[in-house]
Length: 392
Ligand code: TRP
Image (tube, rainbow, N blue to C red; front, side):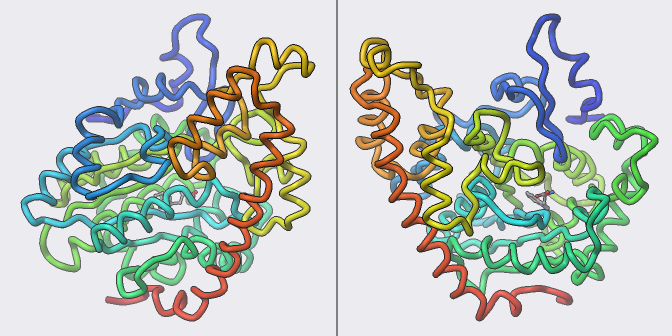
């Protein structure tokens, strides 16, 4: 099975007494041990020489998400860089299953793509999987997932792209392009593989079993269209890796290069559990892109931190940044400069900075960020529709 392994069997692979958690594209449960995921998934850590090479190639400082280990794992990055240096430029591919509203964490891959496009001028393919959400969520109509897909698209484009180099595959609209490749993929993936990788049970509908073939297709489409092998780099949350293990497993038999991957950690929720979730009742547990300034203030004021029970205790012992949802936001983007980030971290640990004060500093930054996002979101409406690709 190559890189494939049993996702359903993830729990069985874990050692006795190890705290159990689960990461699949549709469910993240328990306290995720990201180091352990690297071992279980068989990916490589993004650090040291690879990261230095990436910095050199990009010619200048990397964004906080790359500098501070939020992008922490990869597959085949050195190969993509080798090809690039030989003049064989890659294209970027990422995507989004439409959901009610997007929160800050959802933009991580799109922000990285925006940065990479600005530095390297590479093309970006975006997949909007209205079909996926229809298949995996019982209570939603296709009209609704389509509508949400269009709404989400404006948010996803807001980080800033070159309109001439963005190609949007909107599954129910771009299906004629995707379907022939999805069929090639699907013929090579057995039910037992899909079950093992995703943990399907007899209750899953048959559409969801096929779906992974559609998520594979954009990784191959530009090569198919150009009739040559174009390397593909996929920035995504580590929870999407199972799909791309399937993609990579079938790539070479189909005559395409295996896509390379860059994985980000999932931003922890403000209430102190799991990833920022948009599917459950957790509206309070994340900063949504359309939150009002009052929402931001309330949510961050109530957020879970690594602080102590009393001020006296905190002054004496210091707080614990690694478990703090506010610190995670500073780290991800809101402390732009490393000196600022290190200052906050060090003052937090030493007890010099209390949680209330730290939150009060962060609130206006997040408010301003959302305000700028809203403006950028309006601006992309003039060209988003024309970037949707229905035929080549
Ligand atoms: N399955 C992803 C989601 O639920 C959507 C998606 C499609 C995607 N293609 C992708 C995500 C490529 C990352 C990379 O959001």
